[in-house]
Length: 150
Image 1 (cartoon, rainbow, N blue to C red):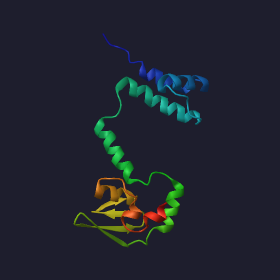
Image 2: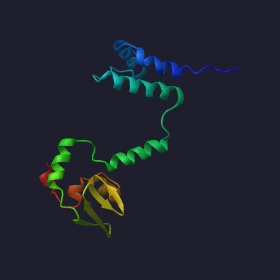
Image 3: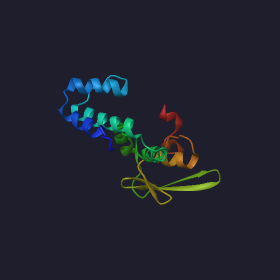
Image 4: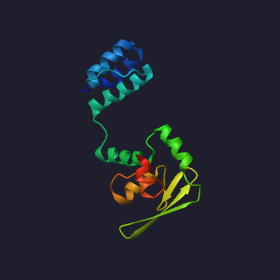
């Protein structure tokens, strides 16, 4: 006896559902009001959620890996990125910081920073990797004082 998997049919039905129907499904599946985004966004998030509930979510090790990758990125704040770009030392500059009797050397690259042979988009991600705690990388490497930050 074969069992029929209803999930592919539910996913296909998203394409023909009306926007009010999609929003009703959102309320059922997320237990919250739908965001004011376009139909395509609603469809994709609903499709993911339907599959997540039926088949399970991401594995814990995948979530951890994604979190680590996210920490290496700038965080997506375009305004802060532009400000930092104006303040970034010129390519090739070496930033040196001693932490717990270990000297750490970071090289400024054209598209970010490099530490221990690995590229980083955020200097704060490097400071966190070195210290194990959240730091403002500009403060950690002495490019900005704590007082100037406030």
